[in-house]
Image (cartoon, rainbow, N blue to C red; front, side, top):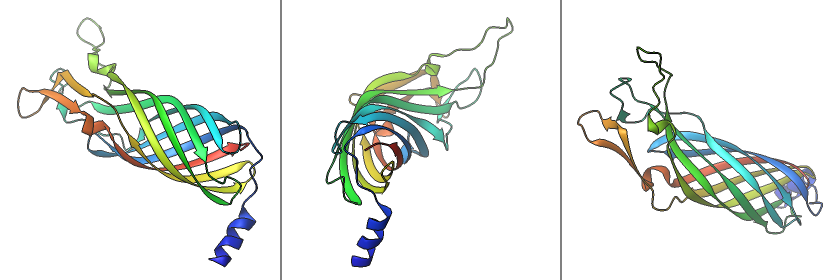
Length: 205
């Protein structure tokens, strides 16, 4: 443990007491019961070394999946889309230490939707079902993060978060389950869930 502490100490730098910083995040999670990667960016300000506030934007970018809802017009399964944005606050415990923890919370708006390749009818009109706009809801995302100060302008963090989307119930009228005529329905447990997050931050802390 002593050798590890010396190694971490040699890699780290003291926090400077605050400033503007930018973070890039990758989240490993499940969306509508299928593995996905959510990536995002956050821009904010450390008012002190302990207290951060900023804005953040996240969305599914890798391992996008087809839904289980079938569209009779395109005769295919649209691609699932999910994103959210909001205001994020974070409190750091002992940020001058090489290794320290922090707790954060985001409150904002999520959007659950679907995407398709553009198709036209015989008159040249684009097919634009309502599910392209999706359904928007309030989202709350608490997180616990384990941070490592690498340089005074560079920090890495491994975190665990949970998406909470209250009163979510999305019946997609244009989609049906392939085996029957029932409308495709997405419930809160399909979009809520845990994620493992890797964040790299640059700037002043």
